[in-house]
Length: 471
Image 1 (cartoon, rainbow, N blue to C red):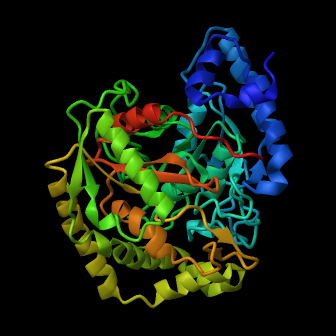
Image 2 (cartoon, rainbow, N blue to C red):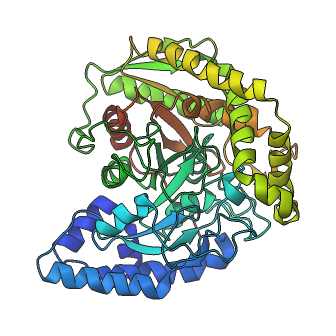
């Protein structure tokens, strides 16, 4: 029997194969993860709910199926966790809020239904910025989630619990959601891989919304291959979600071969300004590695990409206010201050701002696709800074003590690809001199996640592993 450290060291691709060949039991690996959660739960606050007994039951069932020769795929018997926006039948689903503190759905969201059918074991539900309405994961109701690389730093939001669970080895894979960067920001700050797929690629049925026309659901994992395997399970049309695409789903892991010969990579020039020294150095080193791998790398301009954080904010505020309107009329005092303030802003956003923001999206997408006529993928830093500090009031601070401008330092880099709906994957480029993860994102053409995975996987192989947090 493997010890806990060994069991927790495997990525999904390796763990799934060891479970398939019965080298490792789903029961022992689930117990190892539950022990790890107990060890760090209070220090990290990554979990809102731990699904202990149901997880052990699912692991025993998976083991019995495997002993009978019934293997469902690479997630069979693998312990995962979900952002607590995802409906889970019979399991608390809070949205990170006080308003839904006792809400237990009577059906599963499609993403979890597909993972459950693939044999995954649900460890629990993960902490988030309340109703996914922020990028720090400071939460007045369920506690502020901490970054495993430095407990005085934010994990990023809104899917901070998902990123922290991966970095702390308290889940083998997780699900996050992304409206302005909420998969990629935690991936960047916690040293994970985060894939925001093309809008409509993954069903959002049974996932609490923030802003319907910007929301995406996707994986946060240890490796690019794991993200590809997870997207394989959850992608595809869902009759319960009228916005989900009927576009065929390819085999995402089929071409992860490390070869970038003939690949052309465009560096988005407008997203190279305002970078901290450590981000700039690490990003430039990543570009050199991509060139060594055989890719042609050069700058490209996308003139209006700098307007996207404003476009996304106008849409996000208005659509969130529409969803929360009734609760804001009857239970406004139960929201955290920052989320209530955002919703109040949304309720007075002029309709013309919303319409103009929506109209602008097509123009920005056209500009981006024009750039992609010359390039296979685009690249940019995921954020201008490493993970900021958290002050006693839950604000994000620079090391100097100045408040962080999250729009200029983070959303400026991630929100453009919610506006365009393109696939965008964040992955680590290394650690800063003080041991904090740094990250870049790879952006592809709509529904071309396979190429994004191919480029990211080749870079990840060349980069090698990055040090784990010293919890």
